Length: 496
Image 1 (cartoon, rainbow, N blue to C red):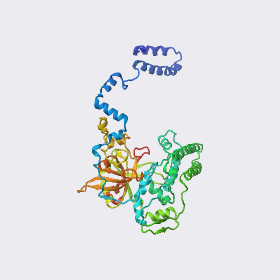
Image 2 (cartoon, rainbow, N blue to C red; image 1 turned 120 degrees about the vertical axis):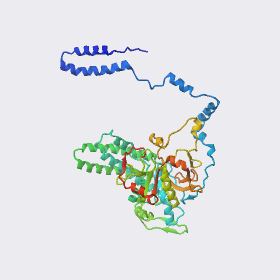
Image 3 (cartoon, helix red, strand yellow; image 1 turned 30 degrees about the horizontal axis):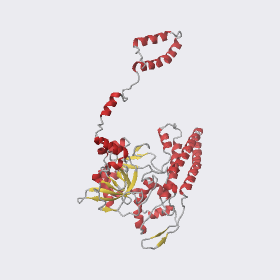
Image 4 (spheres, rainbow, N blue to C red; image 1 turned 30 degrees about the vertical axis):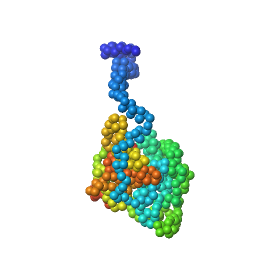
C-alpha cells in the first residue's frame, strides 16, 4: 500500500509563500493565488487525513457478526426450512387457527361480491359498494351493480386534464422543481380515495353495469396506464416549451396553452374510447324486480339516473383518519389529491382509532356501510379471509424482534393505506365489547371468506387509515373541525 507522509502546517506555509512570491504583478498574483491555493488545500486535506472509513465493514466487525449466529441443530433446521419454503406459510401461527369464528352479531345485507380484477380501482368499487344496498332496496332488486367502467372512463379523462393544468400552472418553474418532478412522476393512475367518487358522479352521473360493461383494458389497466402516462408526459413537455415561447405575453400564453390542451385531451379521449368503450349520453334500463316483473325505465341521461337513484347528498359523508404522526383533532388537506381540476382535494379529520370505532359501530347498527381503507397486506391470510396482528409469527420464525409501532411504520414508509373495502359488520361480546369487524372486498367471491375479510379489533387499531362515515354518526365536536381551515399537505405526503 502506498504510504503518504503528512504535510506539516509549517511546510504548507512555506509552499504557499514560495508560490505567492513567484508572481511579480500584484493584481495577477491575487487573482491566480485562489486558483492554486484552493485546490492545493483540498489536496493537502486528502493527503493529511485520507478518506473516512469509520463506517465501513471491517474484519473485526465481520468476525463479531459471524459469531453472533450459532449454527446449532435447531438453527440449521430453521435455515433448511426457511431457505426451501414460503416464509409466509412457515410463519402462519398455528395457535391462531380456528380461534376466530366467522359469525357476526350484526351485519348489513349486501348484494353479490364485485371484482376489480387486475386494477387499482378498489377505491371506486368500494365507494360504489357503500351505495349499492340502498339502490337494491329502492328498486326492489335481488342484486345491482354500477358500471365502474363508466366512472373510471371519466376519472381517467379528468385526471389527464388535472395533470395538464398542473403543467400549465408550473410552466415557469424549473423542471427540477419538486412539484414539477412530482407531476411528471405521477401524471395519471387508477388509484384514488372516496372523495373522488362524489365529484365525478355529480358531474357525469351513473349508469348500471350492463349499460357500459367492463372491457379487457378496464379489468387489466397496466398497459393502458403506460400508454396514457407516456402520452401525457410528452404533452406536458410540449406545454412547457410552448409556455416558454409565449412567456412575455401572459394573456396570449394562457389562451394558446389552453387551446393546445384541448387538442391534447382529444388524444386522451380517443385512447380511452378505444380501450374502455364510448360512454353513453342517454340510455334506457330494463331490470327485473323481486316480484319477477320486468321494468323498463324511461330514456335518461347518466346525470338524470344519478339524481333519481341517489336521492341523498353525498357531501354528508366525512373522512376520518388515524395518523399518529400528526396532531389529532385537526383538519388536513392534501394538494393535488383529486381527479377533477374543478373539484376538491380530499380532506380528513385526524382522530384516534378508538374514537373512530365508536362512530363506525353506530353506523353499522343503523344499516349504513362505510368506506374503509387500510394496509391490507399486513398479516393477511388471504385463503381464510382473516387479518389479525398475530396471524403470522415472524418473530419466532427468525428469532428476532419487530417492535415498530404504527407511528414508526408510517414515518419509515413501512405502512400506509393500500386498499379500500366496505365496512359492513361487527361482532361483540355479551357486554358490547367489539371483537371483530366484517369487510366487503372487491377481489371476487372466491377470495377470502366468500369475498369478505374478517378483521380483528386489534388489527383495526394498527392498520386502519381512513373511514368515510355519514355526518349524523359523528359528534358535533368533529363536525365543527370540518369547518376549520385545513392544514395543507404537499402531494408527496406519506398519506397520498
